[in-house]
Image 1: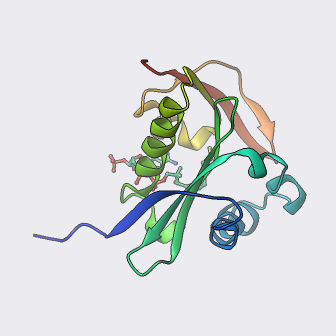
Image 2: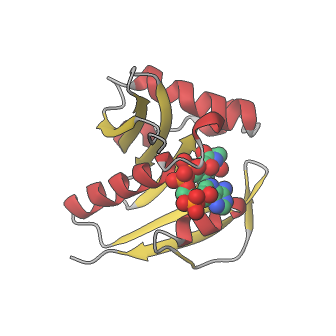
Length: 146
Ligand SMILES: CC(C)(COP(=O)(O)OP(=O)(O)OC[C@H]1O[C@@H](n2cnc3c(N)ncnc32)[C@H](O)[C@@H]1OP(=O)(O)O)[C@@H](O)C(=O)NCCC(=O)NCCS
């Protein structure tokens, strides 16, 4: 029997965990996906709830954020950690934070390659395809039970 890969996922303050959140997003979005630096960092970070995934040794491996208006974004997992449940755990944690905040409708702009990933968590497509940072996206949403 193989042991499942060990990681933890937890809420993270932007200022306190700034370096870790930056490191993952820089690797995934700026280096891997060629998102322009100026588009990656915005004022929303300051006001969002952030979630961070870490190895048991404390190395950052994944991120996600929830804006006060109910938008989820910046979902990123380092390539070598994908397919092991890290992204799903980040998304579930963000949805739990949204519930705690009393949010009812959660929206996100999904890169089209990740539509199935979000659909498995109950999100449905609500808009046509559009381009953002040179990457095709569709808007998706989920309604949370009170
Ligand atoms: C999308 C992303 C966050 C998913 O993270 P992850 O840790 O790989 O996700 P999980 O391991 O929890 O995946 C759960 C399931 O979704 C599937 N899945 C993961 N990424 C997928 C993708 N891009 N397209 C389709 N299915 C995907 C996995 O195969 C897995 O299925 P399984 O349980 O049957 O094996 C990750 O692929 C990533 O960081 N991609 C690059 C950045 C990106 O595109 N972010 C999304 C912006 S909208």
